[in-house]
Image (tube, rainbow, N blue to C red):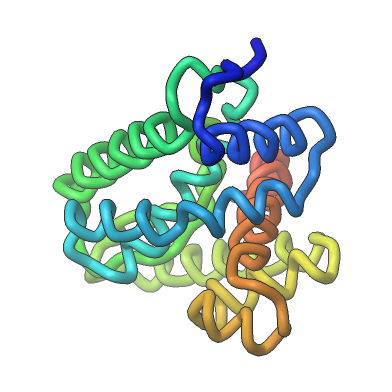
Length: 202
């Protein structure tokens, strides 16, 4: 489906980037779309979540879901409208899951084909010695799986989730735009999910 000739310059710009992204796999187009809408999506999520850390992660998750489903987008309505709907639904899902969580939590890669992302799975505050050993073994297995990623993806995962650095810190350290960091991090998590999915020990 082609965009209407009467569409705004903004709509035509977005659709051109979308076509480059989904037809040519243009990573720069993905990064530019993320850079254009990152802040409005982030602040919308922040109003719903009331947590800057969660809002940051939910922002990139929302873009990840949108980019994964970008073939379904049609120019009948604005890309921003479509993107905000995905982000809103993502927040609703997050809030629903949060009600069922207990503390403390640990970052765990889970087998979730809809999100292909890091989730926080609740663990008991008091583990038996045997359970503690199993948890430690699981964490080590995750680190081993991360080592199988290509070097630039492995570096991003390690900096974000093991060293707990912000997107801004990673951007400055690697001297690349924040939008590129987030786009590559989404791809890294997608690859990691596929590795975890095929590892029966996790």
